[in-house]
Amino acid sequence: FHLSLLLGANPSIMVGVDLGFPYLFSHLPGSPNQEYFTIHSDYFSTSDTKSCHSILKDYIYLEGIKDERCITHKIMETYKLWFDSAGDTSNLEDVFNISDGVKLKGIKNLSTEEGRSFLESLFSSKPNINNQRIVASTNKPKLNVKNLLKGVKELKSDIDDLSSSEIT
Image (tube, rainbow, N blue to C red; front, side, top):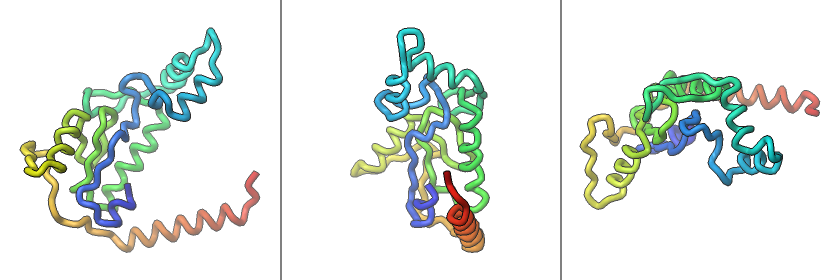
């Protein structure tokens, strides 16, 4: 996400960053997490019951893209806040999130149905973007070099701290 902004991607499109469980699935069937739940299942505790138990144990509702509210786990709110804070240091004018999950601040959020139409119009020979909220400009994002350097220094400091401490 940030790398696409730094490289000047225009538009920058994220697909499937739903940060929620609109269909009470934590991960796509066939994904490593789903396989882990399946391997550790038994007759009374299936992968589906384990997944639902995990989701419903500490769930919250956040504003959704497709639905007014989207069920998610409280840990996912941390990731949402990370995306939301990106608007403080980056121009998100040409960033699109195609998902049926949680709505992200400062980013053009499109349902999967809207996103499909948008992508089709981008790759067709005759682009047709009629919806006013789906307008990609040709301006490259403005980088805030001061904040970028500060972030790189903080990251280097964190890595140095990890290197100097014993990791068990």
